[in-house]
Length: 235
Image 1 (cartoon, helix red, strand yellow):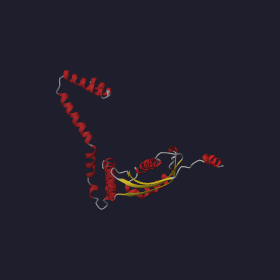
Image 2 (tube, one colour; image 1 turned 180 degrees about the horizontal axis):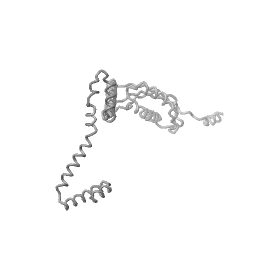
Image 3 (tube, rainbow, N blue to C red; image 1 turned 90 degrees about the horizontal axis):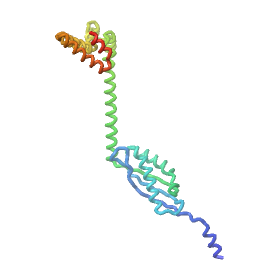
């Protein structure tokens, strides 16, 4: 009779023992040199007999946690802790022949690392604001240079809007002088170059002049201005 009971007992599947573990490790944070200290508690059940199932559970939890924590700063400890406690229990370990029954994480951070992160965040914000101010200043200067001061009438209107109690400059030629200085720089340079070349060419013999114009034509061609080369060669 006992043999019959032994036969039925041998056919009953043996469920692997539920395992549990508590361990701590470090999770690198987004700012280099800073990190979270994480304490994990986990409960699992092997789906078949395994050697060292706890080590597999640890590795899977740490690997997932480090990927999530790498995007967070230590000043975001509370948000990261909530995220880990939401996502880690959903990890599927069936490919490792394990079932994660429960998991929780608590985080701590070093106060010095937290202060360093706060300081770097402030410096980053200050630098970003400084760059924005510089960009706005450059845009404003470009607007004044290209749209306002180059047109005396527009410049007078701008002055009147910003200085309604100072009308004297509107009555003289100050704005015309400013516009001339801002718009005449390039023309003056071209004029000086043209006068210098004319003086030089005027002192050459006919043969020297032909040689110079031929070389000048080569220069124009090298700059894809064959039209100008033909013009000087026809002189």
